[in-house]
Image (cartoon, rainbow, N blue to C red; front, side, top):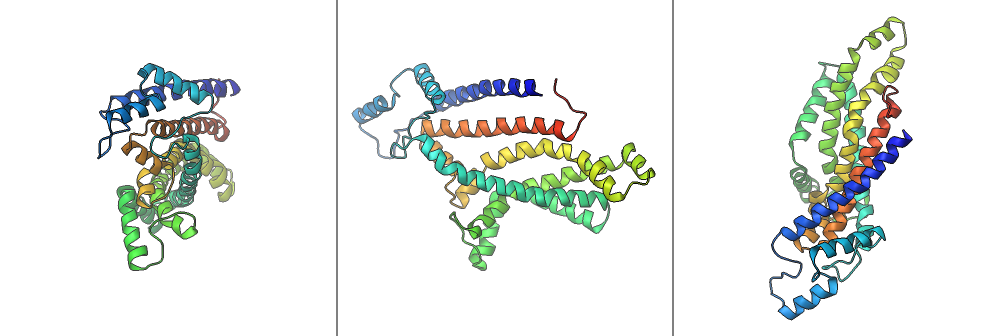
Amino acid sequence: MLRFIVRRTLWLFLVLFVVLLITFVLMHLVPGGPWDREKALAPKVVEALNKRYGLDKPLWEQFVNYIWGVLHGDLGVSYSYSDRTITSILAHGIPKTATLGILAFIFALIVGVPSGVAAALKQNSAIDYSSVLFATIFASVPGFVLGILLMMIFSVVLHWLPTTGWGTFQQLLMPVFCLAALPAAQFARITRASTLEVIRQDYVRTARSKGLPESTIRVRHIFRNSLIPVITVAGPELANLITGSFIIENLFAIPGVGRLFVQGIFARDYTLIMGGILFYAIVIAILNLLVDILYAAIDPRIRYE
């Protein structure tokens, strides 16, 4: 297992390098630049800005300098945020984005997994039909549509919750629910299908024939084995929630990484774009590694040589 973790960690650095290289190339292939404004700047001003930020150098040299800075913990400065360092911008936005994503993930697990298990154990009952209906509805409604509906109901009509902002429990409720709705529906569907498959296995029938208590069978034989498909999607889903909250953060005006990243794209802020991509790539790579490790922890039949 240790060799597997070390090998995957080494591959992680290669993956991050390739991601940064592709992002850098695509970013500079798109027409325009960070100094394109509605009111055009004077050529001498553009030339001075390019020289100040090193954009007058060849692309290969810019990329090498950026990678060298990353290796030393320097992600550069922002072109559009008054020369603030990218590190400080990300440090300001990451806690908010991470809090939003983790709360949505926990809510999705708490709602999705138990409803999927209950639906499987009570197949073809009212509980089963309700769980399937819930999963179908929330898997079909986009998050931004759900967010607008919640705003209209709880903010405009009922005046219960604020529409935008960050810092209070009331401001978290709608964005967390919007982010968690789709993952909760997916968890419910996957858990239901997995649990139904496990229930039909021979070892479950053998356990019942031995006279084991039903609670023991459900916990040790059914629930534990039905978790493996859930974990398969849980890691990438957590990464998606942390890194994919662009629309929700913009909709509810949450000052997280997603909102800053979108603003950086519109402003052609190269260093901010690269910093956001690097953050997202690290989160996804680490969570995928953790999923592989959890496989072996839950299922003793899985070993990495």
